[in-house]
Length: 172
Image (cartoon, rainbow, N blue to C red; front, side, top):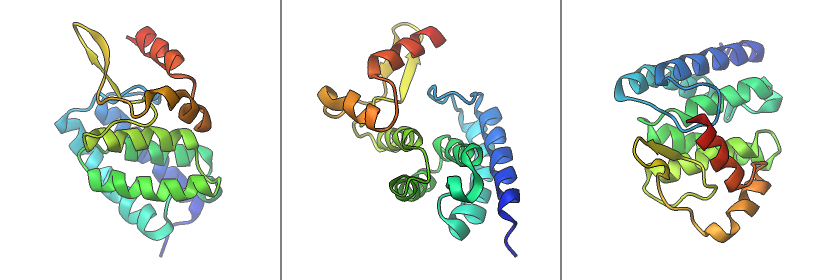
């Protein structure tokens, strides 16, 4: 028997907290600093999320579980770097939810870039940078059509790329 939806929100939030703790990240949208060991811990939680939520309910959108838990589901998908199939599936479901105005376009932008980077393709929104100890922040893959990246970012509710890069620099 499926859990009540309020319980699903609690489960999603707990799974996200576990995933963030495992990968050493916080709730910010800074690039993940995930190791194979920490990703495997999050991977168990990802399997629960896939089975319990994605299979039974599709993307856990705002109407189903609320904004906080929907964002928590995005956190789990975003940090499931060792499970590209889960990320792709979550991306497809999240695209549908965003089109229905039932999930965050910003979350979709970050997950889109995360999947593109994993596949070695150019990013659409200019997220997903990595910190090089010698050279500072550098892109993980190029940005597709850089001349219109700020327009795509604005459509997703994200700050312009220059503002995002200043935030990354300030973070470290």
